Length: 192
Image (cartoon, rainbow, N blue to C red; front, side):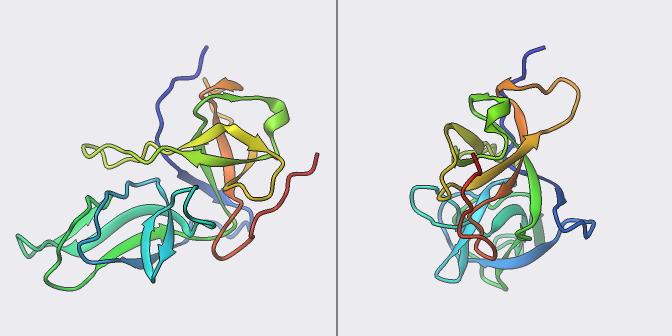
């Protein structure tokens, strides 16, 4: 059975430190910051605020967005969303981004192209900056064309996610760890 091409960003799976549940912390998004940040997007910190991680622009990721909370400027009601819609001009409080930020956290993510057994243990960058405003879910994927043993790549491929219907090849879902983490490694070269 062939894998289905349906990107979903990064989903937490567990962590290498065996401490149990995922850890997340509330960081601030700048008032009226433009551009959506979807649930499952890699994020980082720029000038003290959470922004969407872009591999060509940012050196290290903070973690993965899991949702946001703010007081809606129109209704005045507390609002929780699984994504930041962009350009929220708050009049009260602040915009809090819940980020899964443990450097030992493992995630599952879909590859945009082919994954082979020889890719396990190697590194790769991410691709995709969009998402769905209906579901709030990211469309970020592992960029298969960047897989290498180079240290300066965003993700470490840990293995194939063991679930029925998932297999090596195009659009495989893999388990990854953030290789270039703001609170952890500056990037670890793959052993070849």
